[in-house]
Length: 216
Image (cartoon, rainbow, N blue to C red; front, side):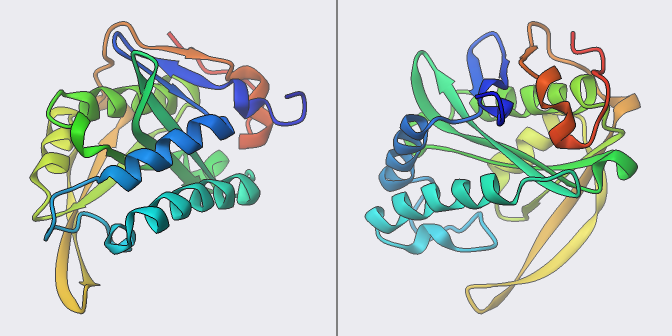
């Protein structure tokens, strides 16, 4: 699409394609949300959207992406990819920023459909996101956070090389819950081999950037 080149943006890894979703991709991602994202009784998200019934989880997934599309701009943006394995949407990987042209800092979030978990896909998705942020967009820092009782997310963060950056107290389901914050500097980042960025150059004005960083 000439006036929205993000639809041609993708990042590929040895196993996965992270791509800006089409409507069909969002429909399939909504199915993953309806099927389930985590064990009953746990809540890895600050906003407990997965407490809803399957049909509502599916609908809210699509609506979330529509909101991100509508609000995208250089001052504040979020790119929420679908992660595709062997032609099947398995989850989503997001990267977001505020005042990126000045701060050069991004934040990430992701989830994988429950039946696709335990295969190392979350780690590979994070590696792709970091490659886009550091090698493509020229970020200086990447941040993330996860609840203390979310060992899977914490393990992905540890494998990716982040350093501790403090804690934050939240109200989750009416009770205090603590997230651990993490930060990764570009100078401490180790790229995964075989990651490639596609279609970024035409998107740069949407990010408020003028030139392409070295993406390989």
